[in-house]
Length: 263
Ligand SMILES: Cc1cc2nc3c(=O)[nH]c(=O)nc-3n(C[C@H](O)[C@H](O)[C@H](O)COP(=O)(O)O)c2cc1C
Image (cartoon, rainbow, N blue to C red; front, top):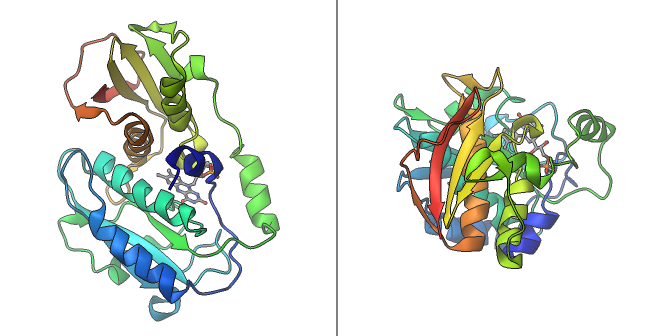
């Protein structure tokens, strides 16, 4: 798959065409899942769930026949690892023409957790429908996208900085700009785009600017999942390596260091 193109064209799909996934596509997803890794080396286990078998649904999704959920143990960085790994599946699915929507809030969580066979020390932070996008979005989907301005992203200078949070990022070479754009286009809960990145030489320090209402015992910290997604996009395009060591840069209130990618 052309990663840049896949990231650029991906969108959340909430209206599906009522066609079950083909056997070939299910087979491709099943073969891809065991290849998914994350730089935290935290196991993330995926489960494909038939909607009708478990009575699964989401009030914002229509025309779907299948969901994918994933499970992770509640260890440090489990949210980032979950976000990183799950986004890999989201992008692969999109490259096959299969639509997804990250769902962390708008579903009956207990039903999905039971269907996924969640263990007591595990969390299923999010799930997603899997299906073929309908030709037209439902009115509900259009209304929702409009309300959260899902097609918009903040401009680069509000998200990317150089050496400190007071200097917006200067012009970079075109390859790096592609990776930066890939972070900017990442999906995030309620399209909050909480990622902030400070470039220091060839080190890119990733932070999360927290908003209220995104953490819970079962959901984990959804904005750290957002960070994992952004790290996935950046690392797919740069082939950098990830470490977690706070560089001690003075960060604005509510802005937390997450990880560093070094090129
Ligand atoms: C961690 C996470 C949780 C999300 N939870 C929901 C959800 O519960 N319901 C929903 O309809 N969309 C959910 N979304 C989808 C976002 O609203 C969507 O990604 C964002 O508005 C950007 O739109 P796009 O994905 O079409 O680019 C979630 C996204 C992420 C990353």
